[in-house]
Length: 506
Image (cartoon, rainbow, N blue to C red; front, side, top):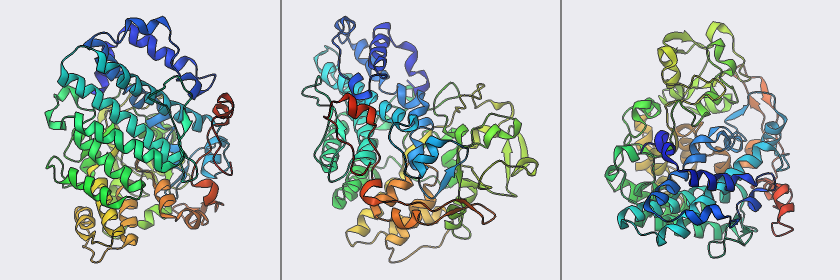
């Protein structure tokens, strides 16, 4: 079933179990996800319907929790030079300035959500094999669980793991044990890669799914995340190999028009790999979080993430991606059925004088037919991409360049669509440029890119500017030995009674 309909059939037993998983958050996230052995579970994990309901629950927090793929997790991406905190908020400003503690709700909430989802995936992996049911359906459910666990684990590893100390993960062999850090993030990546290989072996291709199952995990999504995990692990031959698995599958292609990627009609286009399944009824609020604060009186946009002049200036003259990505002074756009010039009425409360434009299509229709009627939860019918085909192409290009090979063909695929001349002898300078302008304002995580390339310290030593050239965010002191990873929430370190160790320097 499509993501927006997945949760309608959840049984009372599943609801009680989910409630049990979440009920202990006041104690500490990692403490809360330990199985409690309550009688509620004795009547579950018996039937094929139980297995299906548990699979449905894998997607709940991803689509219905603003602290994961709504706005919460995006605060880490907001730390980059592409955007600034658009509204006064001490917690979010501390994150951007790398002076946070880990106790901020904007850090703790996405940390918590990741581990809750991983716990659900592990319960499926532990219990579904013992259920008497159709084997193909069982494989599909298990493949989804391995995939979802891996994607959550990869984000935690990237945010919190280093070569000196890995990120925590639950012990599948002993789920009663408190989740502990692996020795190194290399061990996290090995675990993630094993899960994704298992997922790929069990999952069907997207075009083998019923349309009502679009939004669930599928084979090329597992391959794409394998390419990404290998890239982050700096295993470039395997990153290239699995990017090729996606490319050579014949299941995906770039849409001819870049702007079409971010249209509701293309939620499951050939460029789709993996997205936040969304609808106007309560899923990802990122489009509304990026909309001008108060939406010029027509809708309750949040105005949280505002693009910088540095990002705008990165686009080459003639790059078609700029107009799709950024609204700047004098640009025309459709908003609730009318044509306006940005900013509407000549007045903007954007700190930078710019607004992200990528997620504005749902707000273009008269009558607000594709946006939530609840402006406090500004979700839309647009699926927000988490990893799309263009990124897979750029992953391959980066892996090739890092091996001393030519990445020209892949880089020129995205440049051609953008209306730009091809490059020859592309280097990492070219690759970094293309990743930035192609994926700006997306979940690809510009901050993590800068960290893994070793560029963050130098980039963040420069102030950020608004459209008029004024400084809107001062230079920041980024210390790689500390700031390459984020602080583990001290509350959970305390709950662990010393089993969890804080990342160095925090």
